[in-house]
Length: 207
Image 1 (cartoon, one colour):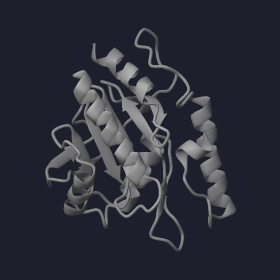
Image 2: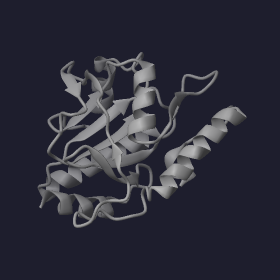
Image 3: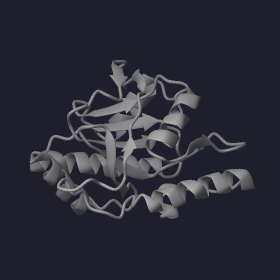
């Protein structure tokens, strides 16, 4: 569980470590990443995605309610990431290609956790590296650091914070499935991506 959600603990103090461990415990209790999507029963994890306004890679207005009424996938990245973000984004691009081949239309949203450096231009350049289809994939920025950290903490129950003495950020490596009502329904590893499971779940929710 820890290796799936957080990529580095070096250099953090005890207070922050306890804070992060509390997130892991809460996620475990919520059944994060371990249960299947089941539309016939109330899902045990009821994390409501709050309001977040920003802009995408094309400098178009974005709001977290944009996909109200449909399922969508979300994750957290930053373009200057030198560890997990490149494979995470490559895996998300793979998911998008698989969806296209299967005729599944589920939007993707990648939230930058470094909005100061991640301008729309930087996000566009980053997305181009992975041949992202921007018709169904928004790379979002345009808010302040405190806002995106709070959004990640509250809406997805995951940390998003700058590492002390570094230009790198601690963040979740999960892919999240958000439902039509704006609740997080499932999470998957964005590194060891369970592609077959994701596709099976997406087929269920788009039937």
